[in-house]
Length: 471
Image 1 (cartoon, rainbow, N blue to C red):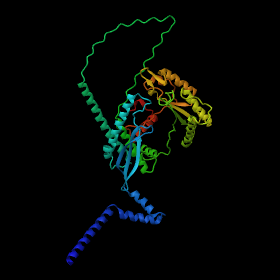
Image 2: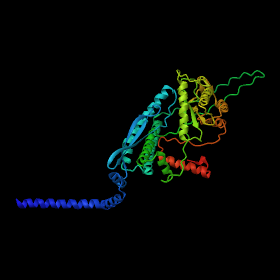
Image 3: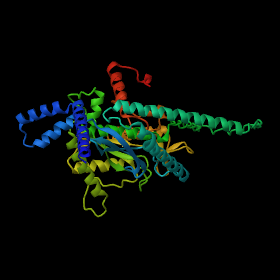
Image 4: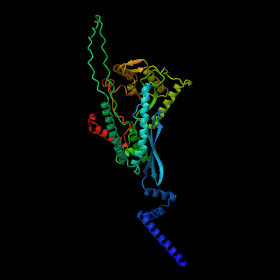
């Protein structure tokens, strides 16, 4: 019995010794003794009021950087009640899973005011199919592809996202070409016989002294939209979510983080903030009035104001508009006209509100008009329906805009005044004092793509490159 007991004790002592040697090797490989000794010595001289808080902060700096452990894609509603995609990023932080950020971006699929029923059904079907595929992208292949990556490595993340998108786009193109080839094989070739040529009817001569009305130029047809994968917004949503996760982990605002990507991790001394643009009035086809053309009346504070001053002023203007729209309000305005018939009425309304607040249009603030003209084109009549039952051709639209800007010089911007196909008339509206580019973050665009495009635009303006050569 004694020998058996001694053997067991010896075996246990041997196992304990081996365990101690393994522990010593483990901590020595991770430099725990030397780092702990240095940390305790430095802490003794500092003697912080919160000893364990100081030690926790020091150990946090020695911890492994957070890594992406999973992503979740969800269907949510955007600001106008349309279904869209949301991506949530989870990271492993100090051995614990933590929800770090989420992002939502809008799709390129346009939401029209009062579309035809068949158009509405088609758009809803396309949007729902795009969301289903985008959710599958996020929750399956993209989730596995980004597993274990650091959210701070934005360039590597966006590189992988771009590679994945190019592969899906190539597959989609090949499938469409295959379907087109099969359709051509299955559909018989119809040979059409030439139509008989009918003699032209003789025109009656005009009475002497009466001019024949000149025929209107036919409008150019709408250009075909660039086809893209409708589910590609999953790429942009994931890239933005990773950028927001990195900014959150660094306790930095998102625009600081994006600026650090542009300036190679070194923030510039000064950052240029964009001007506020706030929608004051919404009209368009979806409104109750007759006016279709002015989809949005947008207020732009003067550049000399700070962001806080501009926002405060805009909130006061919105309060006055709410009082004006309230039928039970006792508020009185210098200009109180019916705002459902003419564009000038909206200008007078804004002018009256500014007078009541002691503001001056053109000095304290300016206006921009989102015309959304491409939504107003009646291709059957070949004209724009600016108000219910009132149609104008492109030349008449130019005259109307010129008259409006002359009457209200505070209007400094017209957004989408004509279709881009009406280039000739668009150039006749006015000589712009300045021009610029508006970048919309959507679809397969990544954060690094926006940074690269911004650098390219800045180099163009700096060195005078031709914009037509930009790809």
